Image 1 (cartoon, rainbow, N blue to C red):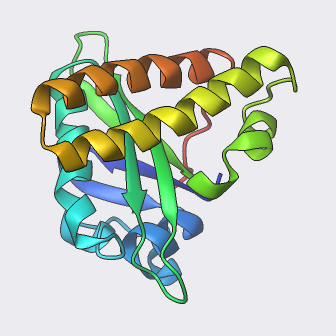
Image 2 (image 1 turned 180 degrees about the vertical axis):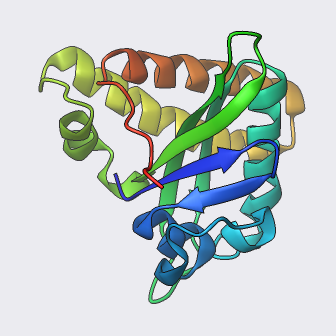
Length: 176
């Protein structure tokens, strides 16, 4: 894991840890400060900002899960990030908080298993491999411009993410 974020639905502000602040906002000095979405995403590739914010909005309106690949625009090199999060709701089903983590996509294999407390079993390795292949498929489908295929691969990606999450330990939110 290279970063963690929280989102406050009433204010629309993000709270980033140092890693997320460096990668998403482009400035690790912004860690722990409530940021409007424009500032919180200033370190991402421009083409990834709206899809990320849409994924958060969609999670509020639909299933509560955020799963998206992002690219940081940082120097000396851009990094591909896997962003996984969820919307926490109160007893009436109202969104009260969003929370998520960032994982460097180049290190998803053994590091992700260790981070999530997974054993080095064949099933875990197979799910990791599937995740990588599905992300590659998603990119290819995006290039094709076929929205139906994109929706289908997104469903499978979400299920793979749920499988990984089911094997993981409970999420620890960022402390203010």
